[in-house]
Amino acid sequence: MLKRLITIAFLLTITGFAASFLNKQPGMTTLEWLGWRIEARTSLLVVIAVGFIWLAIMLDRIIGVITGLPGRISGSINSRRQDQGHQALAIGLVAASAGDGREAMRQSKKAKRLMGEAPLTDLLSAQAASLTGDPDAASRYFETLADQRETAFFGKAGLMRLEAERGDDNAALTMGREAFALNSKAPGLAKALYALEAKHGNWAEAIDALHAAGRDPDLDDAQVNAGFAALYYQLAIEDQNQNRGDKTVLAHLNKALKYDAGLPPAVLAAAACHDAMGKPRKARNVLQSGFDKTPHPDVVMALFDHLGGDEAALSKLIRMTDQSGNHPDALVEVVRLAMGQKLWGEAKRLLDLVPEKSRDLKMWQVYADLAEHAPQHSDDAETDAADWPDQNHALSMAAKAKRPVSWQCSSCHAVAEDWHAHCPDCGHFATIGWR
Image (cartoon, rainbow, N blue to C red; front, side, top):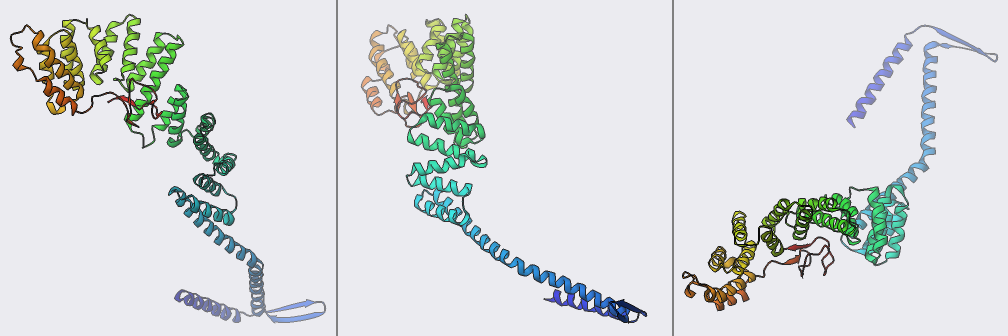
């Protein structure tokens, strides 16, 4: 208000100064037009001219306000409808994220009524239809999105999910590949596509998808590494089945071991490949690395055979076990080999390296076997029966000991007989591990 008063006072002051200035100016102006003769002071004519100009400007503004009034009223109504539509859209998206399909559908209809057809309203309608169990309606909405350049990725990704839910993996894979071609940096889509490609045995394509899926925060480094190791191992098996040569097979096996140096099937396959190429030292190095990482019984036996399969080989294996920290899983396998050579004292010494509370079922069973066979078969004076553990005690402890390591799925925790790329129970890829 004060600012307006100051402005009015300023304008009045300027007007007064201008009027005073013009009033003091001498001079007359004569006009003759159509027989009329007009004489007036020049200053008065200037004032009249300025007045006419001001009236013209004001008249133009009044006309503009009158003619623009319907547009402003319409714009105000549209703005209010847009605001209400955006509010309905926001509420609907929140409801969809919370899993409330009915509320999401109600808000999507309201948003569409207020805002008309728009990508976001179509997306909300598709999500709401999917949540309310209407896949056909959801499919129509996603197809609409897929036909628009700006929303094609979201439409195809939605269709991929719908087809997967319907059980049509081929259609889901097609939609997923098209969506991935539009945006290869979406980790959520890449993760789903990786699972589909692996399910169909498309190992190279699955590797590409996994590179993008690795950005997903839900996937930790261990899962990503296990996925790459399994995929490259499967590529190596495919190369082997199609006789592509040891070098090609070994190249993929080396990549698998780069991501998981202890994957037993890859370790054994790489060692066999080196042996076939006449490189026993490299085969032994691969087996030793695998033994240090994952002392699986098959890896231990293969390494033992590579070292000579005799008492000297067992001594080397014992030293390797000690150098790698005397892992209980390694110790129990080395103990079995020592018992096979009737080295009862060495077997007992190795078993005693593991505290009782850390022994699993397998180790207590080995203890029971040692208690049963060692004293009666040993000619060593130091191996007196009183120095050996009681077999009944060992069996009693075995009954309540923790389960031994085995091939187990990290997703459904099912135990498998052997390693599989896909879990036989839940079907997840690269989840079987020696744990």
